[in-house]
Amino acid sequence: MKFKVSEDVDAPADITWARFTDFSGIEAEVKGRGAELSRVGNWATPEAGCGWRGQVTVRGRLRPIASEISALDGPERCEIRTSVGGMDAVFEMSFVHLRPDMTRVQVVLDLSAKTLSARLALQTLKLARGRVMQRLQGLLVRQGDLAEDDYRRAQG
Image (cartoon, rainbow, N blue to C red):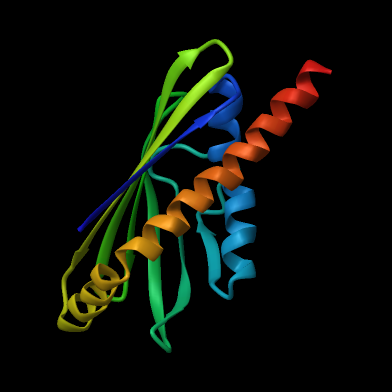
């Protein structure tokens, strides 16, 4: 099952890229939502092959989570592969340079199930597709607003 959303950000591609690939900030947000997450190999600079392990509560049960940056081609593309309790997810962000001061961020979230319980969870997501799309769009808007603020601050 695929979810696709996009957002135009009023900031150059390099600033937008930096904000959307701020993995320390993303980790803090995920931990704030109750997930236990730690970097594999205690890396400091993100690159392809870096990842995370931990646990997250899904549908009332604590499930293992493993994520890895599978592609980091800045400032054009970032791809993260995740496995959570029998479900695989590929989260891909593309950054399209529209103008010197505008970047389009396109996100594709591709989910697939490996187990029966994951298939049931995926069916639930299909029923709530509109809400999932709204959440993804909200994530893009929040990060885009932060990138725009960074750009305005850099302009003075």
